[in-house]
Image (tube, rainbow over all chains, first blue to last red; front, side, top):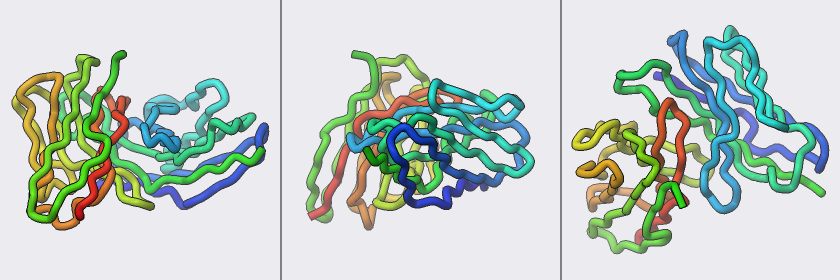
Length: 119
Length: 110
């Protein structure tokens, strides 16, 4: 079974600085998707960024970027120029690639990392 | 507004009662999901449905039931067989793991 591990229960960062959240995963599949989701105090989950395993290039979305190391099964999230609105719980998630299978689209989540942003 | 609508936001249940959480979507996605979130833990998959009139158990389906009679609707029933139902429940819809989530329903057993 696939597992996703986030080893940092809590992280903090000063406003305008950069922070990196860590995630490792375990799978025997070669094709899959990885995601970072954000859960602000409102509790509604929001997709931050997505990475396809077959792509070597790291995904970037504005201030958010990932460092995807497929061989090491590592998938970290870097938040640059941190803002107060970035404060939330962040979840790393995994799903298998390929339409039609019963597992397709099922997300396996890590335990989450609470990010605090200090003004 | 487009999205996922969950109701009620807060629900209290006496032990031994079944309760049903509603989830409606207007995003036209075939796949819908129910997750449970406990404090300090990630989301765990309860049930999912990839098409109308079909659904599969997730990792923690015991004590729960679902139906998928319409594409737009995927209600979750928490039965009296669920021994520890107090939790935050999230419904989602999407494709390829890119999920849109509702605002959640918090269930408390009295």
